[in-house]
Length: 124
Image (cartoon, rainbow, N blue to C red; front, side, top):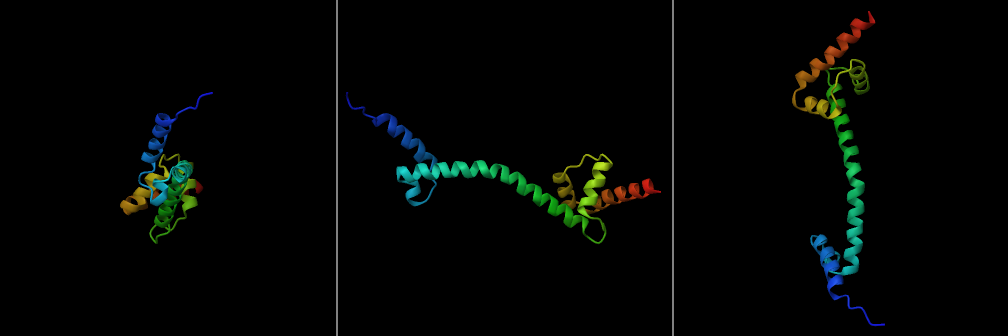
């Protein structure tokens, strides 16, 4: 059986991997075996962190809303605010609420006051 010369195929595969790893530092961008290992590791990390990013942003939005509600003017907790928003069927998600709480505090204050007033009227 004759020997298979893998010059073109192997070189093309290695250059594709090297192009992916060209920004890596040291041997991670030069040596073929470590380059393939780092490429696999990078792809695993990017896949994992795509869902992690969603989680982190949700935590950030919740923190910003909570900071906006815990101020002296609002005197309301985050959980009560979200509960009453769903109860009143107001379609404001956490991202929009966090932007409002950060940029326009007066409007955030009026939203929370409207919810409190409706709650007081419904209890009477």
